[in-house]
Length: 196
Image 1 (spheres, rainbow, N blue to C red):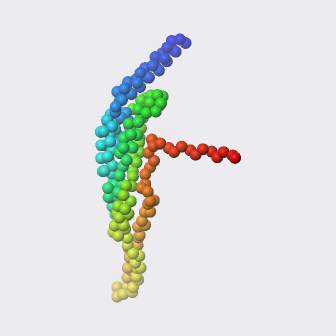
Image 2: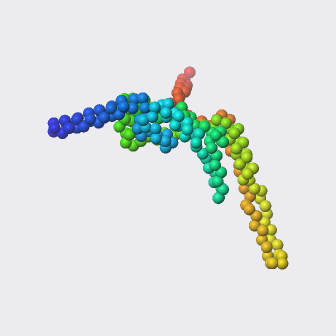
Image 3: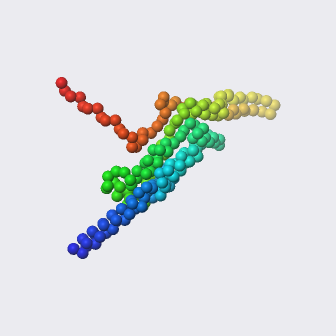
Protein backbone atom coordinates (compact mmCIF):
# COMPACT_ATOMS: atom_id res chain seq x y z
CA UNK A 1 0.00 0.00 0.00
CA UNK A 2 2.92 2.34 0.74
CA UNK A 3 4.30 1.98 -2.77
CA UNK A 4 0.96 2.92 -4.40
CA UNK A 5 0.68 5.99 -2.16
CA UNK A 6 4.23 6.99 -3.09
CA UNK A 7 3.45 6.68 -6.80
CA UNK A 8 0.28 8.76 -6.39
CA UNK A 9 2.14 11.47 -4.46
CA UNK A 10 4.86 11.53 -7.12
CA UNK A 11 2.23 11.77 -9.86
CA UNK A 12 0.42 14.64 -8.12
CA UNK A 13 3.69 16.50 -7.51
CA UNK A 14 4.69 16.02 -11.17
CA UNK A 15 1.36 17.41 -12.40
CA UNK A 16 1.58 20.39 -10.03
CA UNK A 17 5.19 21.07 -11.05
CA UNK A 18 4.16 20.94 -14.72
CA UNK A 19 1.31 23.34 -14.06
CA UNK A 20 3.63 25.70 -12.21
CA UNK A 21 6.11 25.62 -15.13
CA UNK A 22 3.31 26.50 -17.56
CA UNK A 23 2.26 29.35 -15.27
CA UNK A 24 5.81 30.68 -15.05
CA UNK A 25 6.44 30.31 -18.79
CA UNK A 26 3.36 32.40 -19.60
CA UNK A 27 3.70 34.89 -16.73
CA UNK A 28 3.58 37.93 -19.03
CA UNK A 29 1.67 36.37 -21.93
CA UNK A 30 -1.78 34.97 -22.66
CA UNK A 31 -2.11 31.28 -21.73
CA UNK A 32 -2.11 28.76 -24.60
CA UNK A 33 -5.62 27.75 -25.64
CA UNK A 34 -7.22 31.14 -24.91
CA UNK A 35 -9.42 32.37 -27.79
CA UNK A 36 -11.42 35.56 -28.19
CA UNK A 37 -14.29 35.11 -30.67
CA UNK A 38 -12.38 32.20 -32.22
CA UNK A 39 -9.10 34.13 -32.51
CA UNK A 40 -6.26 32.12 -30.92
CA UNK A 41 -4.24 34.37 -28.61
CA UNK A 42 -2.08 31.83 -26.76
CA UNK A 43 1.45 33.15 -26.23
CA UNK A 44 0.61 36.75 -27.18
CA UNK A 45 1.68 39.70 -25.04
CA UNK A 46 -1.12 41.96 -23.85
CA UNK A 47 -0.14 44.60 -26.44
CA UNK A 48 -0.15 42.05 -29.28
CA UNK A 49 -3.44 40.54 -28.09
CA UNK A 50 -5.03 44.00 -27.92
CA UNK A 51 -3.90 44.85 -31.47
CA UNK A 52 -5.13 41.51 -32.84
CA UNK A 53 -8.52 41.87 -31.15
CA UNK A 54 -8.89 45.43 -32.48
CA UNK A 55 -8.11 44.19 -36.03
CA UNK A 56 -10.65 41.41 -35.60
CA UNK A 57 -13.28 43.95 -34.61
CA UNK A 58 -12.53 46.33 -37.47
CA UNK A 59 -12.75 43.50 -40.03
CA UNK A 60 -16.00 42.08 -38.68
CA UNK A 61 -19.09 42.18 -40.87
CA UNK A 62 -22.80 41.49 -40.60
CA UNK A 63 -24.67 40.14 -43.63
CA UNK A 64 -28.43 40.49 -44.05
CA UNK A 65 -30.01 37.93 -46.37
CA UNK A 66 -33.39 38.41 -48.05
CA UNK A 67 -34.08 35.57 -50.45
CA UNK A 68 -31.27 35.82 -53.00
CA UNK A 69 -30.27 39.35 -52.01
CA UNK A 70 -27.36 39.79 -49.61
CA UNK A 71 -26.28 43.06 -48.04
CA UNK A 72 -23.05 43.14 -46.03
CA UNK A 73 -22.11 45.85 -43.56
CA UNK A 74 -18.90 46.37 -41.65
CA UNK A 75 -19.15 47.10 -37.96
CA UNK A 76 -17.99 50.64 -38.80
CA UNK A 77 -20.94 51.07 -41.21
CA UNK A 78 -23.27 50.30 -38.34
CA UNK A 79 -21.46 52.33 -35.70
CA UNK A 80 -20.47 49.18 -33.84
CA UNK A 81 -17.08 48.79 -32.23
CA UNK A 82 -15.59 46.10 -30.05
CA UNK A 83 -14.36 46.51 -26.51
CA UNK A 84 -10.73 45.48 -27.14
CA UNK A 85 -9.69 46.52 -23.63
CA UNK A 86 -12.23 44.23 -21.93
CA UNK A 87 -11.47 41.29 -24.23
CA UNK A 88 -7.71 41.70 -23.71
CA UNK A 89 -8.14 41.87 -19.94
CA UNK A 90 -10.38 38.78 -19.92
CA UNK A 91 -7.92 36.83 -22.11
CA UNK A 92 -4.94 37.72 -19.93
CA UNK A 93 -6.85 37.01 -16.71
CA UNK A 94 -7.01 33.28 -17.52
CA UNK A 95 -4.27 31.70 -15.43
CA UNK A 96 -3.14 35.05 -14.01
CA UNK A 97 -6.01 36.11 -11.74
CA UNK A 98 -8.06 34.42 -9.08
CA UNK A 99 -7.13 32.16 -6.21
CA UNK A 100 -4.09 29.89 -6.37
CA UNK A 101 -6.39 26.91 -6.95
CA UNK A 102 -8.15 28.73 -9.82
CA UNK A 103 -4.83 29.63 -11.45
CA UNK A 104 -3.51 26.07 -11.13
CA UNK A 105 -6.75 24.77 -12.66
CA UNK A 106 -6.34 27.24 -15.56
CA UNK A 107 -2.69 26.23 -16.04
CA UNK A 108 -3.73 22.57 -16.33
CA UNK A 109 -7.01 22.80 -18.24
CA UNK A 110 -6.66 25.73 -20.64
CA UNK A 111 -3.83 24.34 -22.79
CA UNK A 112 -5.78 21.07 -23.14
CA UNK A 113 -9.40 22.18 -23.48
CA UNK A 114 -9.03 25.83 -24.44
CA UNK A 115 -11.05 28.77 -23.19
CA UNK A 116 -13.40 30.81 -25.36
CA UNK A 117 -14.00 34.43 -24.46
CA UNK A 118 -16.84 36.26 -26.21
CA UNK A 119 -16.14 39.55 -27.93
CA UNK A 120 -18.10 42.42 -26.42
CA UNK A 121 -19.71 44.54 -29.11
CA UNK A 122 -20.67 48.11 -28.40
CA UNK A 123 -23.07 50.30 -30.36
CA UNK A 124 -20.97 53.42 -30.14
CA UNK A 125 -22.99 55.47 -32.61
CA UNK A 126 -26.76 54.80 -32.51
CA UNK A 127 -27.36 57.58 -35.07
CA UNK A 128 -25.10 55.86 -37.62
CA UNK A 129 -26.92 52.58 -37.04
CA UNK A 130 -30.28 54.27 -37.58
CA UNK A 131 -29.01 56.07 -40.70
CA UNK A 132 -27.67 52.84 -42.20
CA UNK A 133 -30.96 51.02 -41.64
CA UNK A 134 -32.92 53.98 -43.03
CA UNK A 135 -30.87 53.86 -46.24
CA UNK A 136 -31.28 50.09 -46.36
CA UNK A 137 -35.03 50.44 -45.96
CA UNK A 138 -35.14 52.83 -48.93
CA UNK A 139 -33.32 50.24 -51.04
CA UNK A 140 -35.33 47.15 -50.08
CA UNK A 141 -38.83 48.40 -49.34
CA UNK A 142 -41.42 47.85 -52.04
CA UNK A 143 -44.99 49.03 -51.90
CA UNK A 144 -47.74 46.49 -52.19
CA UNK A 145 -48.99 46.41 -55.80
CA UNK A 146 -52.17 44.64 -56.71
CA UNK A 147 -52.14 42.13 -59.51
CA UNK A 148 -54.48 42.27 -62.42
CA UNK A 149 -56.38 39.75 -64.50
CA UNK A 150 -57.37 40.76 -68.02
CA UNK A 151 -59.06 39.02 -70.86
CA UNK A 152 -57.32 39.98 -74.05
CA UNK A 153 -56.94 38.75 -77.58
CA UNK A 154 -54.52 36.05 -76.44
CA UNK A 155 -56.83 34.88 -73.68
CA UNK A 156 -56.55 35.42 -69.94
CA UNK A 157 -53.51 37.49 -68.91
CA UNK A 158 -52.35 37.63 -65.28
CA UNK A 159 -50.03 40.30 -63.94
CA UNK A 160 -48.23 38.94 -60.88
CA UNK A 161 -46.74 41.81 -58.93
CA UNK A 162 -43.70 41.43 -56.66
CA UNK A 163 -44.54 41.01 -53.02
CA UNK A 164 -44.39 44.19 -50.99
CA UNK A 165 -42.06 44.38 -48.03
CA UNK A 166 -41.16 46.78 -45.28
CA UNK A 167 -38.06 46.99 -43.12
CA UNK A 168 -39.04 47.93 -39.60
CA UNK A 169 -36.54 50.21 -37.87
CA UNK A 170 -34.62 48.96 -34.89
CA UNK A 171 -35.38 50.85 -31.72
CA UNK A 172 -32.31 51.39 -29.60
CA UNK A 173 -32.36 52.34 -25.95
CA UNK A 174 -31.07 55.80 -25.13
CA UNK A 175 -27.71 54.67 -23.74
CA UNK A 176 -25.40 52.68 -26.02
CA UNK A 177 -25.81 48.91 -25.94
CA UNK A 178 -22.97 47.56 -23.85
CA UNK A 179 -22.52 44.23 -22.14
CA UNK A 180 -21.35 44.54 -18.55
CA UNK A 181 -17.62 44.11 -18.19
CA UNK A 182 -16.99 40.81 -16.39
CA UNK A 183 -14.46 42.42 -14.02
CA UNK A 184 -16.32 45.67 -13.39
CA UNK A 185 -16.99 46.41 -9.74
CA UNK A 186 -20.55 45.61 -8.82
CA UNK A 187 -22.58 48.00 -6.68
CA UNK A 188 -22.88 46.97 -3.06
CA UNK A 189 -26.29 45.57 -2.18
CA UNK A 190 -28.55 47.89 -0.22
CA UNK A 191 -28.67 47.10 3.49
CA UNK A 192 -31.85 45.35 4.57
CA UNK A 193 -34.55 47.48 6.09
CA UNK A 194 -34.45 47.37 9.83
CA UNK A 195 -37.68 47.20 11.76
CA UNK A 196 -38.39 50.30 13.88
